[in-house]
Amino acid sequence: MERGLLWLPLLVAFFWLAWQGSKEYQKVEAYRIWAEQFERAKYDIYAVLAQKGNDITWGKPTTTGITELETFSLLDVEEIRFLINGNLVDIENPPLKGQKIELEFLLNNSKSIHVPFTEIPLAAQWGEFLQKTLKNLQLGNSD
Image (cartoon, rainbow, N blue to C red; front, side, top):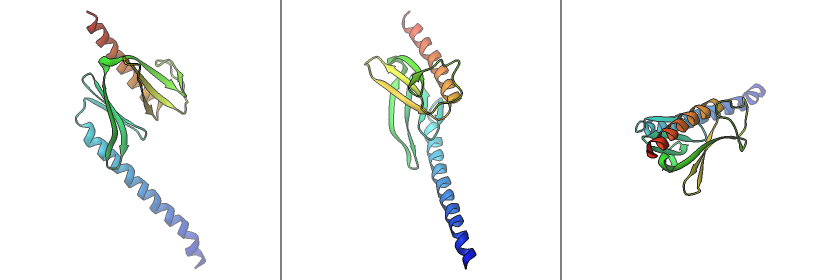
């Protein structure tokens, strides 16, 4: 009887972990279906981000699908900044650690959009790619 009571917390922990894994799987599946319509997409626990042409779409992953979707055009972006812990960092030489990792999109209408990331290398790759795309668009529009 006593051994059974000792194993009960372990059994509860196992079922809780299985339930959490099931929820995360549902989020990833909802993302996979959503991402099929885009040329390029990323998923992490904080946010999803996708690109199709000049449009960038981002939102929050949930078990029922992507929520709080917001779409904006790269044509409306003045600058893309790479922030770690709220500080601007060099995207080509990012620090190894940081708590709050974001790409900030400064729009023409003085609005800014912050897209969170969990990994510095992934955020840096996306930032570099989108900065190059933005630079090409700005050079193409100035002709």
